[in-house]
Length: 367
Image (cartoon, rainbow, N blue to C red; front, side, top):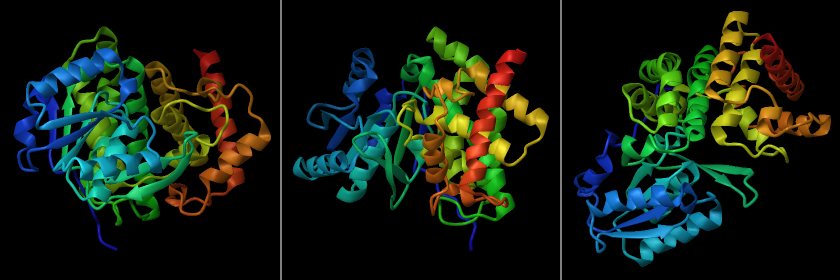
């Protein structure tokens, strides 16, 4: 099988770049539907709307609310509006689920899509993938799209004012990128892009890891202060572009599969990147990682404010039946956990999750 790398059509990042949106959209047409997630907050909506109106007129841009949950019904609703309003392209504005809704709706309406995240909270913006959830927020399916987004715009003037927890979640998602990619390389596994890991994708995954270790703590300080620094710019790019290409063309493994299992736990309702962060710790346990690397991972995630125990994710008690269900969902046929050169079973994942939790408590006692 060939090495395959896929990328977004154009990636634009910087302070105030949303006000320049029109020049990046002219190739797609003259009328656009923008799906705005109402949960991003009134102040953020006002900032985004003001920036959009400096670039596009009311005749050029139709704003609608939606995408709080990326469900089949919501995707169909937005796709129908694109056709009904005769829009040339669609924009997704908000967090990961809104962006996935816009990508999926554009896929079915067969129009270009632009992605405008209001936080660097996941690596979803650049990918040719939409994750579909049911109305309870449980993972239902993954939709492979014909191509990556045509345009991704990261306005760091807006992103630096997002809640710090959102940037932390993006760091948690990005933290898994290199750890999963190197395991996929060892296993000669297949990537989301449909091929083997290329040097380019593997290099971007490693650069993502190095950037996080160097700048993540300072970026968290910046976003807590509501300011935009070079460290924050670097982490926004790592969370979004480096991790986006790194996970999609560099390979996934156990961390995201364990995330998928955790979405089915009745008490676990934290963010995607938070679940992935803990899943990464469980993956390191599963592969019997070097002790120094393991403790460094606990220290890094704890410093950022990410979960290192089940309790941190709302699971106050590890009920065996519930945790068994998580492990079984993580090892369901087709899950990325099988991108490994290890023998993986539900029992092994169950034990890894519980040991990661115990080590998280032990780390907290040590420090």
